[in-house]
Amino acid sequence: MKKNPVIIGFLQAAGLATYISMVVLLIKSQPGPDEPGFLGILLVLTLFATSALISGVITLGYPIYLAWKQKELKLAIKTVVSTAGWLILFVLTLIVTVLAG
Image (cartoon, rainbow, N blue to C red; front, side, top):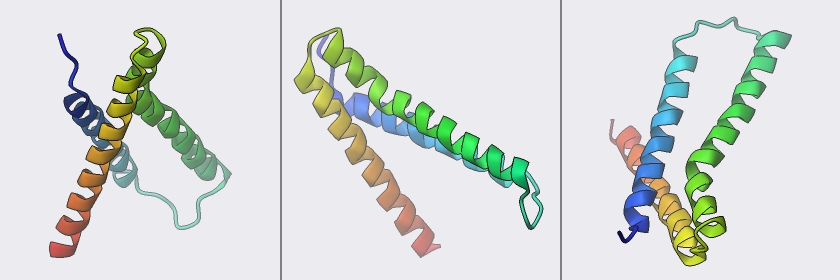
């Protein structure tokens, strides 16, 4: 079966956008104090670092597998570029939606 990097990129970008949306919903649902204390800042930075790790796994996990195990470097690069392209399209769509609303 031929792997289509455009479809894989779309699925990875959609997964990342879904994960980011869930984090935003979690943050928005929590009432917070005006001035966050030490634990609040620690929580935010820990969430940021964890999100960076999860985002990296979602975006780069499969391409690393392709390059390392399957020895398909070109397909891995095309998948990363496709994921980046889809993410840019998602961001532009969000910008247009926010500006129109």
